[in-house]
Length: 262
Image (tube, rainbow, N blue to C red; front, side, top):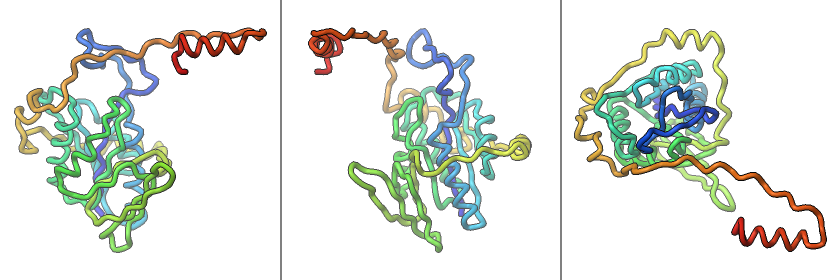
């Protein structure tokens, strides 16, 4: 089976986030990056499917001007190939533009399954996977936590959590799935695999290679315009109410007038 995993690198959850002066993006200087955690579930699931059938190919695709390190981590986990896409013409990280670029790249590769993470932990948009499937005109099942591929590799059964139970969906292949926590436990690559990944060639592609031009990816093509962003307000220190005859009355008053939760 040929399996493609769309992978995004995101800021490490422990890195210090600062904003640019115009507040339209984060200041990326000195930011540490990781593989988007939901994409790690996708990489692991793709590798497990290849291992189950004893054959196949797992290809990682990522957009960015410096994603090589994260792609090599995915290769060290067990992926076979990696593609890095970048062009200085890309001005915004709008979900519709990213999906357009990914769909063009995927369309050049034979595939049976496409995986995406359910969302990226930096923008939480949760749109790219569904948009890619729509552009490729293939079935999609989003936010899955279990996947079963039929022995004939023509159909798949996906499970996902819904309120009060589990939804089970069967689809023909090729199809796209977005991965949720609980789908699997991503493996840690071995030292030897990490060393071997450093020698693996990563294919670089530009917009021209995909048949796209600047008009397809500039600000005028974006569906979403970022006007302003702010960091979360710092949490205020909690209040301690001493035990007394009117402690409950004081607590209720604070919850109503200050916290405004009742």
